Length: 576
Image 1 (cartoon, rainbow, N blue to C red):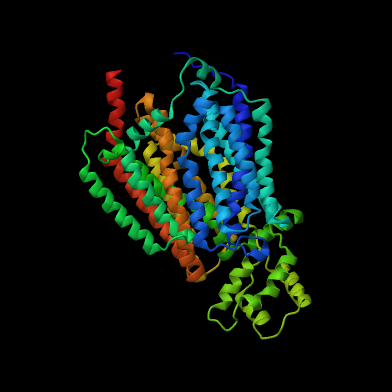
Image 2: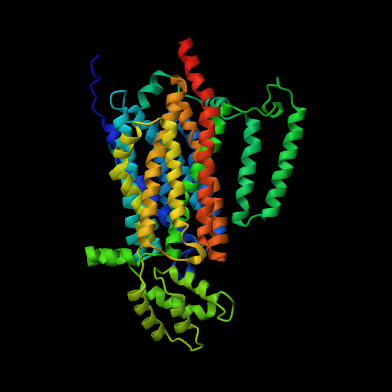
C-alpha cells in the first residue's frame, strides 16, 4: 500500500493559527495574573476581592466558555464563521478593556462574562476552521501545529502581562484588548470562511438538531434542568449573593421538587416538561464525571499557584539566577514598584491593628502583593515598635526591601508550563504512543499527584524555594502533555466513527464542570488553608487526593465500564 501523500495546508489554516495566537495572548496574559489582580489591594490598582469572590469568578466564567461552544458552533454553521468571529472579537475587545476600568464586583463580573461569551463563540469556530482546512493526510500535523500555537500564545502572554503590570494594572487589560483587536485584520482581509460553500449546498445544522444531539449524549431537558441550577447554586456563595446554608437548602429543596415532579411524569409523554428524567450515554457521562476531577486540579496551576508563589515561595534563588544570566532580565523578572511599596508601608498603621494576634502574618501577606518577601522578624523590628513612620522613612524602607527581598514574578514561573509544552510535547507524544491510551491518561494524572506533593512540602507556612516550584511545574506539565491530548484520542478511538467528532465536542463538558469546581476549590481551599490557617501545604495535599481519586476512578472505568463504550464502535462497524 502506498503511503498517503500529505496535502498542503490552505490559507485559512494559517490565518486561523494566527488568530489563535493573538486570542491566547489576550486570555493567558490576563488569566495567568487574574488571581493576583483580583486579590491585590485597591491601593496597588487591584480589585481587593477576597479569595472566595475570586474563586467564584474563576469557576463560573471558564464553565461558560466551555459550555457555550455546543450552541455557538451551531450558530457558526448557520450564519457563517467569519460573521460569528467578528461578533466574538467585537465582544471581547471592549470587555477585556473594561475589566481594567470597572471598580465594583458586579461590573467586573459582567465584563468577565462578556469575555466568556466572546471566547465561547471563538473556540469552536477556530478549531472548526482547522478541521475544515485539513484532511486525513495532514490533520494530525495540523492539529499538532495548532496546539503549539496555543502554547506559544500561553507562554508569551503572561510574560508581556508581567511587563505591562510594572507600569500599571490597566496596561494588562489594554494590551489584552489590543491583542484581540488585531484579529479584526486577518478575519476581515485574509480569512476565507470554510462554511460558505457548505451553506450554499447543504442545510446547516439547526439549534433544534444540536439539542437533539445533547439529549442523545448528555440527557434530556429535564436532566439539564435539575443539574444546571444545582451547579450554579453550589458556586453562588463565593459571590456573597447568598450564604452557604441558603445554597444547600435550595439544592435539597430542588432535588425533592424534581423527584416529585419525576414521579408525576409519564415515559411516553412528548412534552419536555412532562418527560421523566433521562440520562444520555451513561458510560460517557461517567467518563465526563471522572475527568472533571482531572480538570478541577489542573486549573489550580492558573488560579491558585500564582497566589501560592506570591505568598509561600521564596524565589530569590531564581532572582539571583536571572541576574546572573542578564542584569536586564533580572530586573525585568523581579521588578518592584518602589512608589507603590512606599504607599503600602505608609498605609499599614491605618489598615492593621498592631496589637491584634497574627498581625505579623497578615502584614507579611499584604507586602507580598508588592513582589517582596519580607521576613516577619524584619517586619516586627522595623514597623511594630510603636514609632511613627514618615513618608521619607517609608521610602527608605521600601528601597531597602526592594533591594534585599525582591521576588521572581509568579506569572513568569507559571509560563514554564507553556514553554515546556512547546519544547517537549512532540517528544512526550512520541513516547506515549508506545502505551495504551488509557494507561497514559492515568500516568499523567499521577504526575499531577507528584507535583502537588512537592508543593505540599510547605507545611506550617514553611517557605519553599523557587527551584522546587519550577520542578513541580515541570512535573505537572509532563503529566498534562501525557493526559490531556490522550483524552480526545481515546474518545475518537472508541466511539463510532460517524459520531466521534460529536462526542469529542461534548467531552469539553468535563472541562466545564471541572473548571466550575476548580474555582470553588481554589477560593474556599486557599482561603481556609493558606490565608487563614497558614497551612498552604494542606491545600496541595487536598488537590493531590482529588487527583489520586481521579486516577483510581479512571483505572476502575477502564476495567468495568470502558468496554461498553468500545462495544459501540464494534457494533457500528458490524452493521456498516
